[in-house]
Image 1 (cartoon, rainbow, N blue to C red):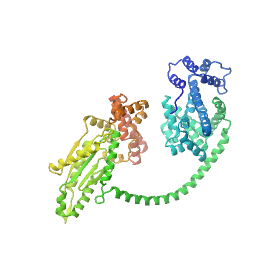
Image 2: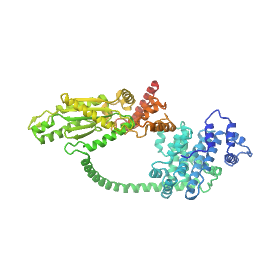
Image 3: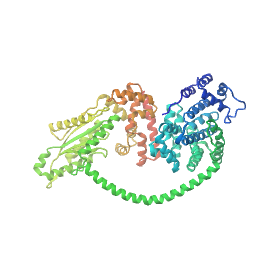
Image 4: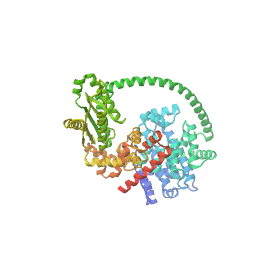
Length: 635
């Protein structure tokens, strides 16, 4: 990430303090003659239009105020750092044109909704696309083909960025603004700048989130004047300006004219020629033509896509069928239909890796058919094969879809239990044992008693605990042997979870949205278990989650990373507690969100028609309030 000059950094710090005096601002600016000269030049420009000439930085600061001075100083610092020549020069110029338009638009919106604070809106607009500048400077070689494609194909820049780089400049902008310590509404507005209007309407409230909405609107205005997507931009401008600022069609037209009139003066502040920006009326005709072309193209593409989709689906279905056959042969035991040993080894390794990263328990169930050799010797190998097939079917009926059932070898089977609990594993094992004992295994119309013995182990792997997989299997095998030794047709359990880990699991489970739904008798356990199968874990690291939840900052995450290098087997959550970065309640909430994101469970309830979208959101809101209340009491 680019760093700011020392003067700009110090100005940001001073601007955030209510105790800062004008003299401190003046003295700091004077330490940088270049910025001093630029500010005096700006103060006397047509952009501010003061009646008398301003000759001293003291008077300039008094007239403009600390926020405007900070904004200009920051802007000039960035502008001076972004001079380029060669093939990237035009891209830098395009960035500054867009940023200046964004800034003027932000100022105009600020005058409408928060008079007196329009300078803050100017700065927000100026910085909304700062991620583009960062990418131009830091990864110019990788960014060049993105910009060339964007210009040649007339597509929206953030979509091309995602296609080439897997991220867009709004993410980079948000990280920079957050790193520089600028206000949270500015960070949020920048994060949302490319979200759909429906998402904006859901997340932002008119009158309450003016800064955030203004940033999104100013970005759309920049796209309208300075991109090839003017048609899409004007649609977005009309929707956002109407919803958040109550501007109708005529007011939007006046608003755009006002911005166009201010562009040249704003461009002079940064020595950027804005004369080639067309007027709103000229752009409007282009935008309307573009919208018409998009509509016609969409209709044509819909018809063509429909035909192509049908052909694609036929070919896809054939390939899927062929692939399923090959996959089944590679991973499935042909006799029983259970997964084979190779599949188990891979799935078990993946389960441990995920559990280690997310502080989750791992459990396996070993099962062995009692006296199977005697069955083969007495009734023949064909009957033995029939028993294995029927046995596997009985086993499967007692498991959940997410449990992984494998034939380990011969008459021995193994299960990787999904989201295990100690009591749950014991109940599951007993249910399977009883189902096998009660099953009718028939030979020549006579029932042959068949039973099985079980051994289970549940454990919470430590970070980089590479030997825990072997230990889990060893303990489960010993528990199985114990069942055999003590008479067969029974189960023995080994719990390798210590008291501290047990308390952690309990605390995390108590915070889960699914637990709240069941305990409040909104859904039963079966219904919750079914929809949880469709709820993927949150793939963000614990550190990233903590930053996103405002529980930690990136500096603390870096400190944890360094500390973890010295103690690689220690869980990052435990280290965060030891270093005082997280409270136990914070850690429990983060781990809960990692393994069972409540917002995804909310969406799953709606998708499965358990509740309407409105009702699902209400339940989610009630759950959040309940959790926050519980955490406040605990703290």
